Image (cartoon, rainbow, N blue to C red):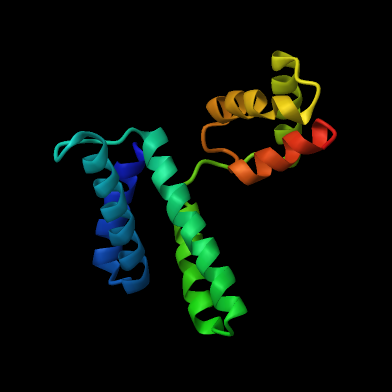
Length: 151
């Protein structure tokens, strides 16, 4: 089942259960996916799972930024709402890699590119992002690559 089909199914289930919080998040997500599909290839456009995952990651990042802002601004009730939405959104992302898996993937990419310094970090990141496609966020990847390249 594709990510979008799963979201549609969960949306119907949330309607039946009258789960307003989940319904709101899923409607917003469905809208973001549709908007991205239209942007990509017109009104009849469809996203594959990799593209849908990118849209979901973007939504997750927005929630994380909002949570940080609300907590700094002394608005715990709004931060709590965003955390609930974040939890629902992360259910649709692929299983994240463990730190050991990530470290070994970075080692393999460094060996593949022959990188020896941070100057070649871009080549390593390009390979990793293609191979890991959504299983690790860019910030985490970047930190691990820098650490292994002695930066």
